[in-house]
Image (cartoon, rainbow, N blue to C red; front, side):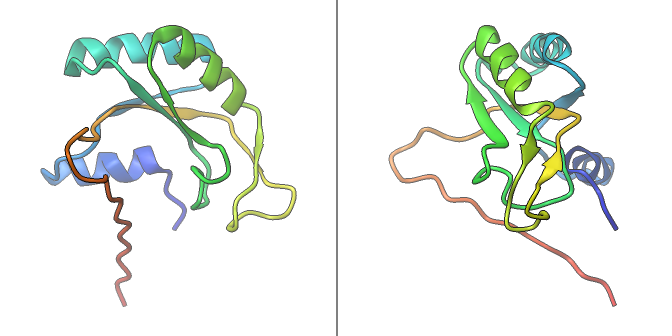
Length: 124
């Protein structure tokens, strides 16, 4: 099953799982509007711009970036949308990015290094 990150988060949220909130945008101008909407809803000041393709390793391929203001949201979204993102899980030519997830910045800037965990569930 191919599910984009934003679709997976919608499914998890429908079951009461707390998720990183965000909105999908199809172009840079829409990304700015979604970032403004997200700030109004959550109070977040920084936004994570995430390419939505069916492949892992998007961050390492340049498809996940942090924007610290709305000008950066527009610039980064404009760079990511339309790019051919190459990751270990894509063909050598990559996959074209058609939309991005504008997500709230939820990383705690605490005393210890931030850790990331990835989870997968396979039902047989």
